[in-house]
Length: 96
Image 1 (cartoon, helix red, strand yellow):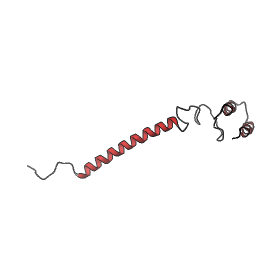
Image 2 (cartoon, rainbow, N blue to C red):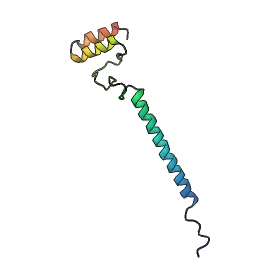
Image 3 (cartoon, rainbow, N blue to C red):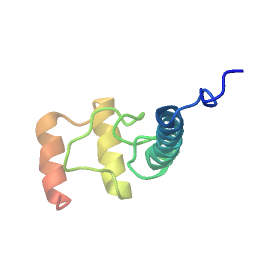
Image 4 (cartoon, rainbow, N blue to C red):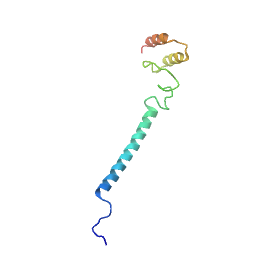
């Protein structure tokens, strides 16, 4: 018999297994948190389809479309009903 040769698993194999398992679960939890934040909070996800990349098209950085008049102005600008100068004048009038 080969007594004294051990079980075949050394301390470094156990440490490597524990470390890779911890990294795996950390990445899974991070991905879930990132997905939830994207979907709910930053305005780019499916919870806000009119976000910066949504159907609203071109958006001025000052006009976030938070109220009805701002959304109407953005819609009219993207439809071509209002030119650039008029758009910026009206955005200033809205107090943004």
